[in-house]
Length: 443
Image (tube, rainbow, N blue to C red; front, side, top):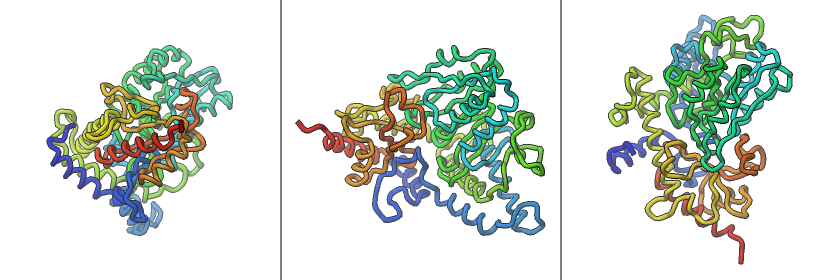
């Protein structure tokens, strides 16, 4: 833990939670623990306010002479620069906006597909979200690539098998596309190693950062992926998405577009009129992270190197978040003062890293089952009996391929983030112990 004392930790978390109007209670006033952040995080008050203000004040479209039109253009430009600073991108022309991460990944796959002959292959992983699988399978369906190859992960360690990934890569590999963090297991992908493997065969590198940006700092110059995609609503904002692309690739690739649209990035990649409120909202998220970075910068100074300006504060904030969330993971796995950890509660099976010594290789996203219990019933029980908001889906396995490795199609997922507390982890663990007893087979 990088906070210096329990008192300072408590005060900082109190200030952080004030930024999220629904951190303690839902809209009906019910006190609850919100552990559904992997499906969509709680929204910052300042992000919601900025979105509403931009919607009302800047409703005139761009390219007009009015104040509203000019302000619209400024809001969009400010949002691009904010994302550029977050990722330490060379400039804001590298930042493309879209409807969703799925739509941007499809758009990227279609553009890359125009270069392919049908003999190439694409390498991804067995713990991907389908947003980072289906676009590449579509190229195979259309005969534009020969094969999509899936890198396995070790079901016991929950870590990607890099030796297997390297064995799948050959001179015909055109794209290597991976998640920075698994949205089911919480496992971190060793991105520097994946990048080196890809560059060895001059393959495009694509990073699904949807489950990464809220948990750990990303630097597209330090870890040089060609493309990075993430969703704003997983980063305390509203629906919408962004993609970083190396500027020379954004220029050389040929995305689908309407004839009058500009030929230059980022506008040539963006379909239709931009939504200024998306850019306003994400700018407000960066303002919040600026604030958090200013609070924690002295504690992480040795870890943020030569960064300067807003990039330095954003790096400080995400570095602190990563360290604090490590403490959440340790508490979840190892328990709190009065309750044992998730991995040792009888009747609970955890999918993902459970070794406390390896907790630095995961984020606090925990997928699990209770023996002989329907995951949907477990999620319902936790909500109705204990006011714990977690997620189980009756389709799609969190839209991920991951559970196939375990022979499962459905499980329960709890996903705290940095505004959650150790006390909430304890409440959750007590609730899981009760649920395990409740669903235990009668003898």
